[in-house]
Structures are given as C-alpha cells and as structure tokens.
Amino acid sequence: MLKKIDHLGIAVHSIAEARKFYENILGLTCEKEEEIASQKVRTAFFVLGETHIELLEPTSDDSPIAGFLQKRGEGLHHVAYQSSNIEKELANAKEQGCKLIHETPFTGAGNKQVAFLHPKSSHGLLTEFCSEVKQ
Ligand code: ZN
Image 1 (cartoon, rainbow, N blue to C red):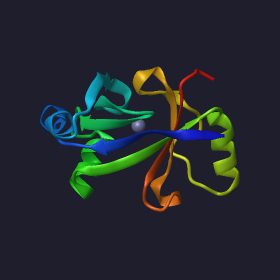
Image 2 (image 1 turned 90 degrees about the vertical axis):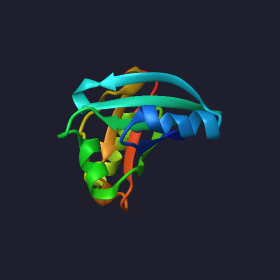
Image 3 (image 1 turned 120 degrees about the horizontal axis):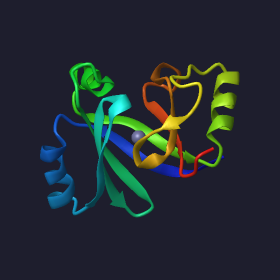
C-alpha cells in the first residue's frame, strides 16, 4: 500500500548551483548529499515537512540523468511513493501490463529499497516506489 509521496526527484546540472535556490529562496535544509555510484548520480535531499525534494546531478556523461537533461532540460524527473511492500506494488503493476524498469528493488539513496516503473507506462512521469525498510 502507498503511504505518501516520499520525495520529488528534480534533475539539475549542478547541485552546488541549484541548492542556492532551495536553501536561500525556499529556505529548505539539505539533509544529506550522497553519490549513488550504480546510478551514476549525485543526490541531495532537502527536508520539507513529511516529504523531501531530491536533487539529482549526473556524475558521468552516460548517466541516465545526463540523458534526461539533454532531452528535457532541468526539471521534475520522478515522483517517489513510499510503499510498505515494494515487491507487491511491482507484481501488481506488472500484472496490469505496466512496463517496469526494475523487476526487483535495489538499494538507492538513503539505503532505501527502490524500484522504478517505466515512464511510457506511467503517462510520462517516471514513477518510483521506495521503502524505509529492507524487504
Ligand atoms: Zn528518487
């Protein structure tokens, strides 16, 4: 079952540049910065009440985020829903004919278990499931 929007992922060219907006203009606090080597991305999480804003910066030219920036520019990259059971969400999505990017969850930012649905199956917006606990 989905619990809430865990975070919004926003693709940026430079976290160092973009964080000025989130800190100085929106007044948010950066909780942590982290590099996810397997995804070739650096992330920065900003706290906003119950949810977070995740900035994503590519760490290499063949990063999926680099491809996104080239095609669509900076902006909303994905929405992440917190789930109590990712495996179940994935199984259900697959059963309904939804294309999955990940058949099984992997360890993403903040040590969360995460998995993505293909944007072609979710009306243009990349969809992430994530959970606090390892399953
Ligand atoms: Zn995310």
